[in-house]
Image (cartoon, each protein chain N blue to C red):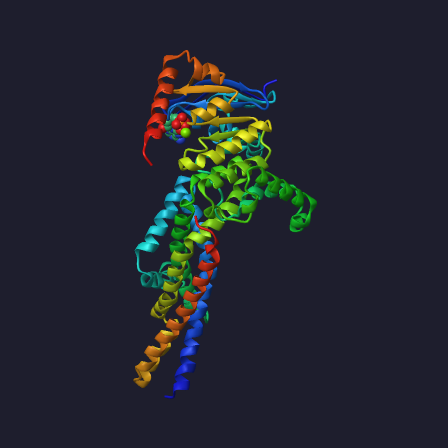
Amino acid sequence: MKFIDVTLQLLDGFGTTCLLFALTLVFALPLGLLICFGSMTKFKPLRYLTRAFVWIIRGTPLMLQLFVVFYVPGMLFDNPIFSQFANGRFVAALVAFVINYACYFSEIYRGGIESISKGQYEACAVLGMTKGQTFFHVVLPQVVKRIVPPMSNEIITLVKDTSLARVIAVIDIVFAAETILSLKALIWPLFYAGAFYLIFNGLLTLLFGFIEKKLSYYKV
Amino acid sequence: MAILEVKGIKKSFGSTNVLKGIDFSLEKGEVIAIIGSSGSGKTTLLRCLNFLEFADEGTISVNGEVLYDGVAESSAKKKLKNDDKRLRKQRLHFGLVFQNFNLFPHKSVMGNLMLAPVLQAKSELSFMERWRFEKSDAYAAIREKALATLKRVGLIEKKDSYPCELSGGQQQRVAIARALVMNPDILCFDEPTSALDPELTGEVLKVIRELKDSSTTMIVVTHEMEFARDVADKVIYMADGVIEEAGTPEEVFGSPKSERTKAFLASRKNAAAIQEDKPE
Ligand SMILES: Nc1ncnc2c1ncn2[C@@H]1O[C@H](COP(=O)(O)OP(=O)(O)O)[C@@H](O)[C@H]1O
Ligand SMILES: [Mg+2]
């Protein structure tokens, strides 16, 4: 099997990897903020419920969660929804990733919001600002700066975690490399796949470094 | 007529009675200095005036208008708390300068001064007008006002700096300017120099002195006895949530009547003497 054929097959899988990565971010970033508000609300039942949910998701393996999302609907309701359409497996993986990462993000957001001092809120209050103005013009900009380092860690982990999706037979880049291994008995495509991750994460690291630098015009 | 009239303010946190009935009034352009040992309730009093806390009892009137009536609000204490619009409007009668400045670290000096007035002006505009706000006369007026205020506190050359690039004294002067831009009727200071190195207190006290000369009405909680003595029109000595003694600086510092006041002033003198003796 030629290098070019392997490359094409891996690129096909890598497309799925990238799509899973990007869509997870698109949904998990805002959902995380929602879960964060839930875990900080003054309404106790909702707060405890949200925190318990986050605890469960963060306390169990993502691989297990992939199985649960994919198989449980079929077992519970006799309706294997994710096997009934073409991209069902991909969608199941996406759902599991979004839930999992939204929970991690929510904790990072919460840490960021709670690290803003009471004095900032009080300064806004005595200047006659509304709660919304306070959050969007004073709290959020400072939170963004503080959470860039932990968020970049989490996002780089997400790139690598996407390879877990193959446990429910989503054809990502590692799945593609494994297929070549079992059909053609070639091991090097697996290492080649690793290079894709390295380059992707290298680019992300550069991007986050750039963002951090952009935000370093002030110190807290 | 008094610009500020405070009557019977009481405030407790759980079972601790922090304020046990505070009465005083303030004429326009007057400066009151509040002195007292730590824990006597000075900060809590300022916070009640700025509605960061809600007094359990008592009234607060500005220019004859009752802004807050503890008894009326207590049945519906949640009311002022939850009536965001009224709360914000009432807060604007007062300004508050914090002990630790509480500047917005992500905003430049001008950004700190202009944020609240710009948001306030924008909130009254339609969506399209907001879009073009930075080109409007109203925006230019706010900017002019902010620049003029910065000049007053002597920091015009720092207008584009960020708080992290300023000394503590400069940060506190920015905080004073930020409060002034909102045109409060009464400007409150909570130990404005306590967080500063001794060599930086002078510049902040000088600004407050100049504000007095331009007839700004002020309430200054301070540990600087010298300053209180020559800037204040009235001095209040607070102890354990009550006004133990009040009067002109000559009365309170020169011939205090209460034993507690005497003891407090003596202890401050000793502290000051020790400070001065301390070798650098
Ligand atoms: N939010 C609060 N909850 C409980 N106790 C408080 C609170 N704020 C202040 N106190 C108490 O009230 C008393 C007076 O505090 P404070 O007004 O800060 O005094 P001062 O400014 O004169 O030092 C202190 O004993 C303090 O512990
Ligand atoms: Mg205090």
